[in-house]
Image (cartoon, rainbow, N blue to C red; front, side, top):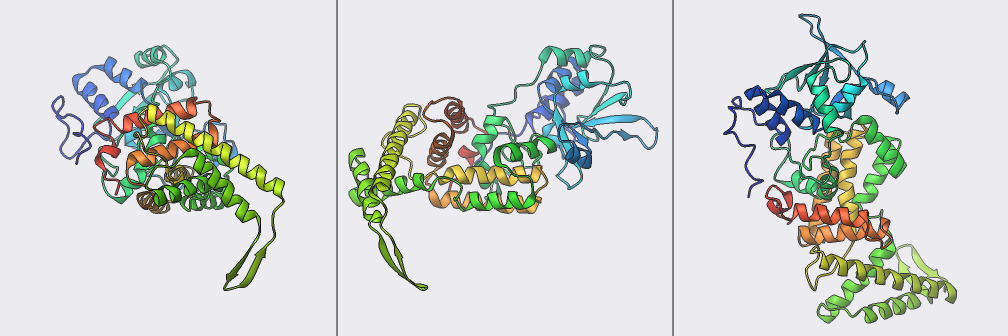
Length: 417
């Protein structure tokens, strides 16, 4: 199995022992080797760049930008070091980065800034660019012409420095739908993501996470598949039981009636004998039970309509259905592990262990990457989409198609089980 060839070495003599981590570094190296500075500037303008910032200052003012400049100890020259995505060092507690475009550097220039923008220092694709007022340099004019880079909806892989096979790669691939959607490196275990401040903002705004303890809580919940609605799993689990008992096909009417039967039976109260003794539950009011039945039956309608749409769009094969939406939690757990690392709420070792656990749990719950993908998409849509079949759905279908077709996709190169 292969992730496609590493970057083509026929166009430039790469230094011995060095492989361009991504297509970006390959393009930069080859343009530099040819002396084609227009191509170099264009490639740089079409990607994102990272630069070191002060962690304490960022924590105190999350909306501010606090770059750390560097000085050549021999010559005294001042530099503003920037890195492309594949050239970032491993995360360290107090070494954190912000992410911006090349155009941002041109527009953000101040007279007190260093005179040089040093791209990918100490690497075969290192280049020093002069810093100055906007439009005063060739690279700034190219950056202004290109604008903000469009990196979303692309499969991006690390050919060097990231796992391509094995348990860690499998767990990382469980988060590949979001990586493709956002244009991030699917197999970057040493995660910087959108930059330290932005990763913290993501967790705060979307999850309410502002501390290590809160990150650990949500990561455990996702890995245990406890973060999604238990009602979704109840409905899907009941269909799974019916399918097992009756040979596969489940009539929707029968499924809806089975929901009513089970919930009415549960509403009558029960007596349970356990190690702690006898536990009795009181009967529920009929109105409450009927409302619950109606809600679950509406949910069945939503599920079947999403599945029909996924079959029409090639996400689900004909005759297949989603058995569980645990993939929605496990895929997010794969990403939550990395988000926490990017936000410095966790360590690389903790993130890697969680990623491996997510992959193992996924392999126990599903038969293939396609089944996993359909379950993830259904969970995402039940959570966000409200049957609009809008971006929450369409973006995932686009990412699914990329992962199921491009030669370098982990889903085509890593066995699901």
